[in-house]
Length: 152
Image 1 (cartoon, rainbow, N blue to C red):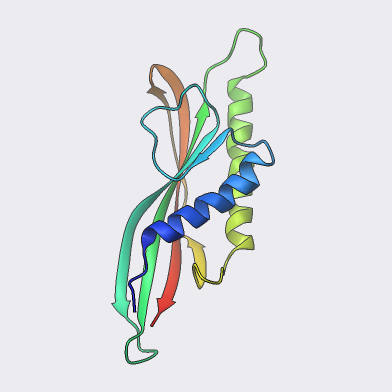
Image 2: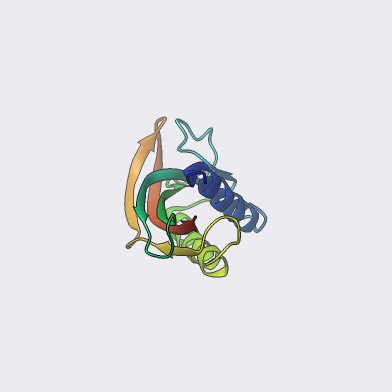
């Protein structure tokens, strides 16, 4: 038996978000890691590992229960352009739309064979900002998601 690899869960969840968010034009990019720079893109959604918890389950002689924790960070530009096509009000609206879309992905994939047996939010999201990233102000919303994997 091999241990559950957090990478497998992280990459699959990022793939699901990418399909839902970039296909619907809510985000310019979904990354399976935390970026050092955003390259003038907005919104950007990043999925990173946020820890793992493992325990021997009472479901069988060699069955393990693994919780994989993920951090999902949404970066949205929070400055107004001179043409008026992007405003702070639109940034807030985009954050709201992304929150609903991320929730839809979690709800639609509460189980995913070969990846996880259960998928949950792990507490409330947190808003920060505006924060300068490469000198450009962004607002950030961070979510913690946890996936339960039973193996053995």
